[in-house]
Length: 203
Image (cartoon, rainbow, N blue to C red; front, side, top):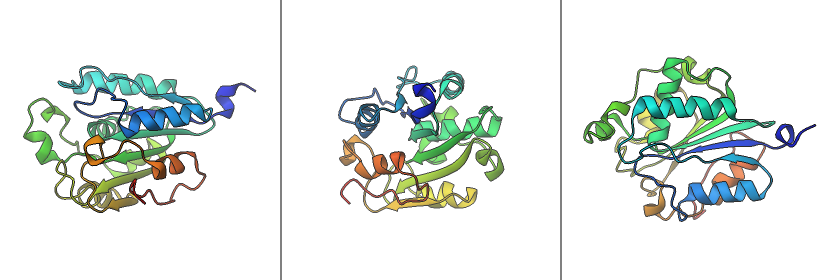
């Protein structure tokens, strides 16, 4: 049996203007998972300051197709969340993964105010289309995210019937909000209970 069949596989996808700084929880998470023996893909998505939706979706398809492991998990933050929704709406995930967690997806209103990412405006996607991408999909958001003023739970999770963790006063759940590490998300990634709550970094 090869290591690829024993390890869990993780794909971590960043958002707009994210150049994968060492102080971001995504970098921290990738390092911790790798150190624990898991297979981790944490790519630099093309042109993060002026992303092209089609280019990002092509990259997403390639990375998901290459993801291996006994349990395959995709962790999306910010703009990568709506990219995943676009992939779901188009049926781009040919072989569903085991788990997806969508962290702090931006709203249509926020994306529309920024020409660089306006093309990423959330598509019409059904719960069935999303469930076809993964056995389990979870959402995590804050109640004061400036990129999604209505709250990710109300804007996305409730219409799509997704379980959601709403974290109080945690902003966009990025480096600016103090998320250089995120132990609870790491625990969820390596744990065996999909519906275990994901808490804020301070809990």
